[in-house]
Image (tube, rainbow, N blue to C red; front, side, top):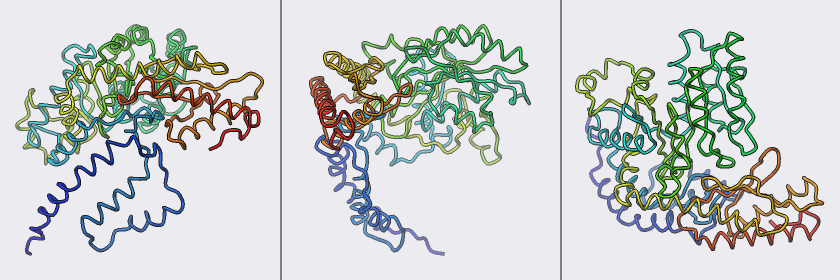
Length: 485
């Protein structure tokens, strides 16, 4: 059979790339005048379904236009005024690095498959581990994101401290502020809900270590096998940092593994002025870290760091006859990462685009970009404290602050309507992409201020507008349907 190769296709692709790069840059990076959030409406769905159905061949130009039309309906996390979720805006340098890495399409699983990128990833991981405070023989691996890193951290803990055949006795200790991905991972690994202890956080939304030690001892006396404590460096809801040193001391005394979910907060390690706030990360046995959250990377770019990398090999190394040629040439300097991870198919682009970004913009500039997130959240809190009728639910921490309009004399239902309305109005007017959350049962507004492109004065303007909207809502009906959407 003759080859199905189409010799003109590559030329057509190269031509399309040359014509599309500027369009992509302006459409995905320069979005300050675009709607912050654009959700497909019912009238848009028929067209999207039509183009979503494969069929006959179409020209590259036509399908590019269709792709742009589909992506137009999205949350623009690159918008300077988007602060609804934690993923930070993407650096244009990371975007370029992703393009380059994707073009090579290297499989970063072994020395045989991508020895150059594997060395880069190993070196980068070791450098990041050293910044956290992990001594040699620390190591780790790039993964899809925090959910995968947390799952793998649980596996490491189980394999280290739970005797074979006794997983049904294992017990894990979480705060009620721990990210839901941890409970999901435990379920996927076969742990029942009754094996998970959700301990109440303290008044600052931090893991209350005073409850932990006695709970562990009670479980041991009941014949169970405590094996893991999960702390958090930057809780999703409030940015709180758990008392990691205290948790570590308890884990050492009780012989438990300490995994820290640092998905977004760990990036403060590279801050030029605030790195000491996350100094407790060095006490973890393993930790997750998402570069696509506060290191300004494209999706996906997660990390799992481990204080002793031999634990990765113990849990994830395996054999396959078809891997023998790769096994034969492995060495310490260029490892086979398939022995470090659940994934065999793993793109080298995760590490390469992060490396590319750090090499181009430098660690100092990146650190200042992270610093700015702290400053923005603190400016928001400062402005709110000047106003009447506003409550700071959780003070600014790691670029996150939660707050609510809480005028006396209004019911909780009325306050919920007002705060939800403020969010919707800020979004519909394109003033700011601020979403709501619930903190201890009450609806609040949450700012995740991670954009280096937003000025401090812009944040002040946003808070003033939120105040005006809330007061207008109160005047127009005591908080019920009082804010125009």
